[in-house]
Image 1 (cartoon, helix red, strand yellow):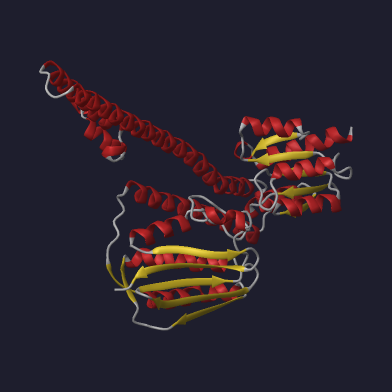
Image 2 (image 1 turned 180 degrees about the vertical axis):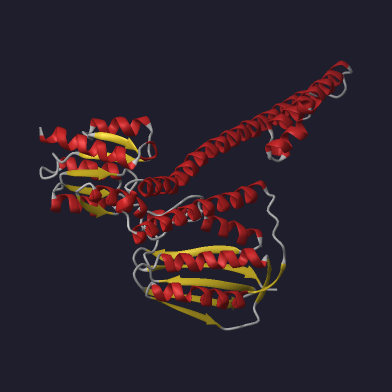
Length: 125
Length: 310
């Protein structure tokens, strides 16, 4: 069973995304702030991380950088899921090695699931 | 057409006072220049007085124009600043509205998908999310309208006699179940039941409720919240003390700023709009009082306001 870590501070989104992924046969881990997310990523080594950029305790960009700097977590694919759609944010995280950048309000749960499956299958090839 | 030439009415339209309004200031400057030139002309052609008076006059006019120019540049700067704040404001508001909107969207999305496999309880949880988030958007818009009214100056506050302690007792009763559920001990200390002030009862209650609500919300996982009503000099003080998360030192100067939310506000439990304290401060100040706080991170906060005693 593939393990997904969801770093997202909105409880409601944790729930709808979590239920969707669990329904599709994933194991879902949740972190409600940046620090907890980073800790969980290092401890549990998930197959994929879904990361919001606006987070309490530690900003999403900082979490991302920390994950990339750590040899344990640097190869875990990261999908950015956020409402920030400023071009400089998109460019920056893609440059840093994010797999995809999804703007929350433009995607349905089904599409997010598809994107995640795509990233995971390209990863295993 | 003529109206657009009338500086007074166009200044009113922009909501700036006359002495900060470039259109009006330019007009004044123009009139002063014309008068100065005419006076200088007569003084020189009629050879009245000695030339030093004339040069003094020219110097005086020059100094006046310099000051005027300075004021005008300043007021342009202020208007540019206001416009920058407005666009920042729009940016923040749209972002703040988008968060609950996204929650609603994904919840509806979930309810619409895979209907067969959903249990009644599971669906109920999503209906609760829908309700909570539409309430959140509603609160934000209510708060925004209040801020807009306060800022445009069209915010009527009534004045009547208000017993602060009465309201405090009422609020304590209201919040008791909520506090108990969050494992928080709620207390009230009051020395004098007769302390009254002149204020808008509805709004002052809202301010008092906001301070108490914050104290309970930011006392995460249990603790103590106490309310004090007392008299000091000729003022009534309302003070809410908690031993909650506190405000980090670096954030303290922004606490009353519009939309400010401290990083340690544990967003999950506290779906605030970042406008409550800003509104509270404006209302208390409009009523003739003062607001303040002291706080230590991880130790707790004390928020208070004072109003002149009636």
